[in-house]
Length: 261
Image (tube, rainbow, N blue to C red; front, side, top):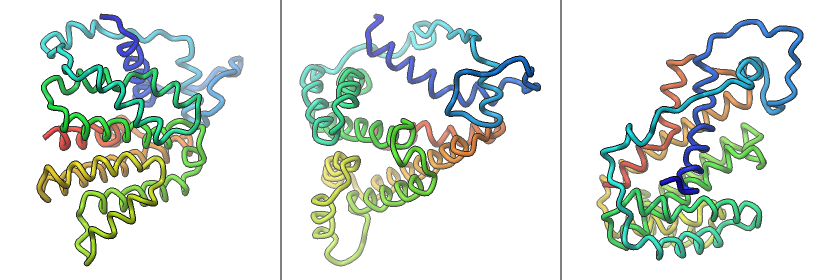
């Protein structure tokens, strides 16, 4: 099955692997005769290594063999999910070009494959979270936002997001916490609006221990994204060991697994 979704996910995977590849290849002085005319957004070591790799071929193994034992069934609510995802994106994305691109990514199809056996209430929460985390992460990674191009703004973005997540998960113990949650939901940044759906769903279906674990994993994810973003802004490349430590957090698997419970 060579669907557009598969192609989109592979492209995203390749983009995410970029920094790892750049950190693995050995460095050598860049020949003076080579003047890079691409990678204008990179600097220092990153620019040197990107120039050395420019034009090289990276071959993926046969992914069908690697994932041959994975279930291939789609959730029976797949078609309904497509409409849900479109409505979610329309709520939070005002840029028409970005909205069109995100709709084309086909999150509904992705969620129907991730959770083939989930019931509709569970799918709503999981889908709201997954769409939210992609949009939230793009604010830092896309390179076309103020946050993605300023380390201080990015740090403020993480801190504000975490405090909002903490309240919407019902983890604040201050008096009148429910009223605070209601006020929070009415004044959310567009990128956090979908998390109100996630928080509401989890407050009604999980206990505090589960929500605290989910919050801790999200916190680690955001911290790791911040560290990765800092390296990109400075044009520096961590060692392979440091990179693997950073990437184990910034890839976002842990909060997704905590939510899947």
